[in-house]
Image (cartoon, rainbow, N blue to C red; front, side):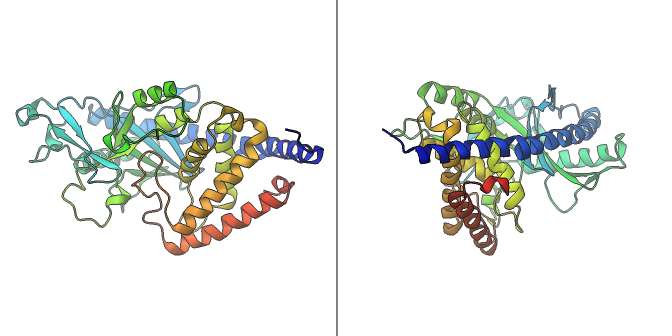
Length: 365
């Protein structure tokens, strides 16, 4: 197919613009974030070292691999989540029967094995390992560790939540979440994935992702808020962080995500936090299904992919629903105020119109 020369010129101009934006804005954000991560993780490691002295079952898994920390997720430039992986699920079975969207429970496989569990005092009368009870114990330990650690003057516990959250140097917020790694398992609630009629990802890639498994996190589940369910306190939140990262390997997918997050931080950091980096990542995964060929993730296509994701985002904001990639019954906008979503939809539309109509827009963005 012959492409008119002016179209080629416009495309190469856009590639140049995006590369410049990536070098000047995205790389600067990455550099600043990695400095912040180093600072934040020094404090968190110190706190967790104190926790481990008091309670050896909570062993810190926050390890530095050349500046990359396993189990750390950047929520925004000032907000982070650190997952600490606990040992030995052992005698507990994983149950996700779909009654708790986005969550699952851990139940004793046999009541007689209760005393064999490392976490015996957090197991309820019905045989469930209570995520809330365990988190409550962990919260007490972290509060004590904050008072003892060498950074005690610059770290404080955030009080009005059942989550374990620290405020560091009055600037950064870090949530520390106890979790179990479920490698080699795949939850029933995500069994529909991948969709049979879509050629992405490649079957070998799917096997890798499913072998990677998922995590079970002890944190408040948005989907259960307001439901006075007895299970609510016992439930563990499903997380697919590693699986998602593995899917985004290859082509310019990760580069695309970095640009999306930078645009979000600079233009969509709005009241009520309607649009988070995780929404961008989710819509990027859906875009990968819509454009399954590797050639569609070439450098020359990034602008088209970004525009596609922003149009998807507008549609989600207007419908006030953003389905989780692996758990489509779970709405990632749950708990967001309708007016915040409405406001975000207008802002995203302004940004998208600018990108679609102005070939030099990235000079100003």
